[in-house]
Amino acid sequence: MDFFGELTTWFAGFAGSEWAVIVLAIATFLESIFSPIPPDPLLIPMSVLRPDMAIWYGLVATIASLSGALVGHWLGARFGRPILSRFTSDSKVDLAESFFDRYGAWALLAAAVTPIPYKVFAILAGVLKFDRKRFLIVSLIGRGARFIGLGILLFLFGEQIQHFIEQNIQKLSLFGLAAVVVSCLCLWMLVKFRSKLGVS
Image (cartoon, rainbow, N blue to C red; front, side, top):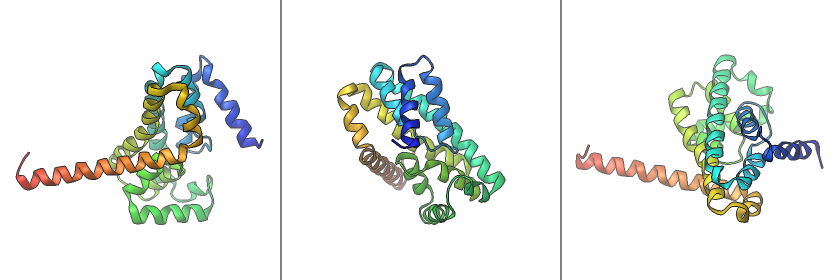
C-alpha cells in the first residue's frame, strides 16, 4: 500500500471515534484548500455506523467544505495564479483555467460534485475574480449534492449500500452532476416560462 493509501486508511479509522465529526469537519475544510485526501473515506463509514446521523454528517461536510472554499477563493484573489503552483502542476492549472474560461459556473459545479480537484477550481475562481456570491451559491449546490446526497443514500440504505458506493463513487458523482444540471435547467426553463406568461 502506498503512503496515500495508508494515510486514507488511517483517516478512515476515526469513523468510530468520539472525535469523528470534528475530524470530518477539519478534513473537509482542508480538502477544499490544499489537502489531497477526500472526506468520503471517513464520511461513508461514519454514516454506516450511525445511519440516523448520515444526513447530519453530510451537512457538516458541506458547511466545512464551503468554509474552506471561501478561504481558497480569498487566497486566489489575494495571491493570484502563483498560489496554485504550490498545490498542482502548471499543466493542470492551464487545463483547469481553459475549462473554467469555457464553461464558467458549470465547470465549478462539475468540480464541486465529481472527483475533479475542487480546491483547484475554488482557488482559480478567486484568481479569475469570479463573483464571490455566485461562487458560494454554485459551491453550495454542488457540495450539497455530493455530501448531503451521499448522506441521504446512507441514511436510507445503510451498510447494504456501502460497498456499492465505495466501488462506484465516480459514477455516482457523475450521476449526481447530471441530476443537478437537469434540475437547474428545468428551474431556469420554468422561470423563463413564468416570465413569458407574466407570472411573478
